[in-house]
Length: 217
Image (tube, rainbow, N blue to C red):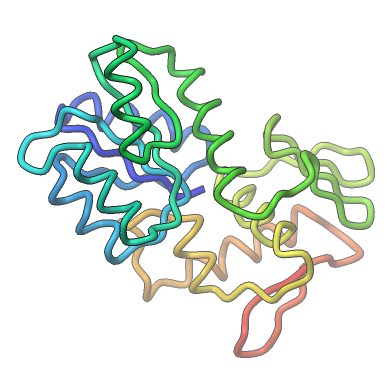
């Protein structure tokens, strides 16, 4: 998943981003509401983790703008206020879920994953093709019963290809959805990652290169 973390406390934002990247997610950071709307205007996110009490453009206004414009991401709203009224207001403004501060990081990850599943067509909990099995929830991949040692990016690419159900996935889409905005769009990072993934998957080959189109399983 590609995530946008919108939090005006820089240290907290970077800590959350680092933790979510360790969970295999691609994460961008915005420190205020204006920057959040700039990010969503040019990038596609599955989930926006949105602090409610933002300077400048308030979190409620950011959320309402995304809903009004039909932006497809799910919104997880964070706030230091924990009264029922605050939660009702946040959800009424279009948020899909609500998490009061302070929170356990494990719960944040679980809620993001749940929202991510809702942001796309329903998929089985375990993705399978031939003798390959990938469990996004447990972050495990097996081929012929043997566990594969995949990097976070390799796992993300494999998940995207399996989720596509045989559709060709372009290198541009893989870069957009598995990497964050720090990735150089002119590098061969996708090609290199797919090459490493092929070697780890072994024979018979599962990933097909479609000339001038992309990759598919």
